[in-house]
Length: 369
Image (cartoon, rainbow, N blue to C red):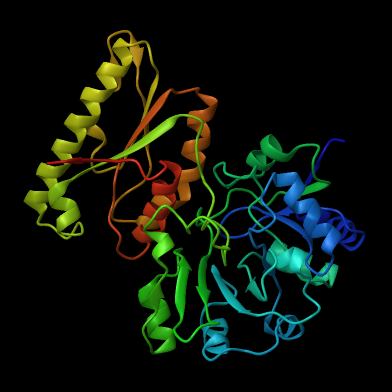
């Protein structure tokens, strides 16, 4: 079965596929999602099967407005309505106690449900046309870089799903921020374009950060409350390592221009040396850098070219999130053997960028003394 690819004119057909229990990939402002009827246990099982995704990894339920949330939850936790009114439609997922109509197959067996309202007119129309909440993880093979274009979805899931709604490349490029409101203290479970500082301002209270964000993931035997917390994610085929300096880590990247310039040179020298060594062994190497440092890197080593990718500008963090998953997929297409990347900070949107990069690298980071 070939997967049908259509633009926004395919919304009515896509909605009918959802109503009859099929699967449709859809665009959002973050990444492309793989949608099924969130109230149909069999549709959720199909999503897990299509992705090769563990069934204890919860799915995010997409709605078109706040009214559509009410039947899905037992109650609105304190702060939920405030966050919805502030950030929806937008890249924020809120975890709340689920109602009985939401099957456990959709929530990964949990009594909570993750809900968001995406900022994409095509998908909002699609959800309204289907007249159903849409369960939708990222539309990729589980563990691989998330799809930011319809072609990425087709490469991964052609023949496994019914349709792709193509609305062009996404804007943000990394998945939504996830906040858990079911505990005593609001807790960030996944960083995204909406920052923890913005959440705290909207809520007027402190937001905890789940330890799994910084560590390698939740501990063995612990049930993840949100997507991306437990299993290897965003990973290219090649081994990937991040490179930074001890000074940058100690100062949390809040350094003077002179210190930053010196650190940039140290990082580039380290990566260039590793690139030359790998090229001498006959390997093809990929390098990720930013606009501010691209002139520091080798573009070739002897008769071998270096697959140098500019991720964006440090002055515009969303340019970097926008390009990350596309670059990782391009490295797969180029069949590189090793990838080296600069590390960036953990402030604002950079926190989301580094969360994805660390997971893609399996937490491998080279720290220069």
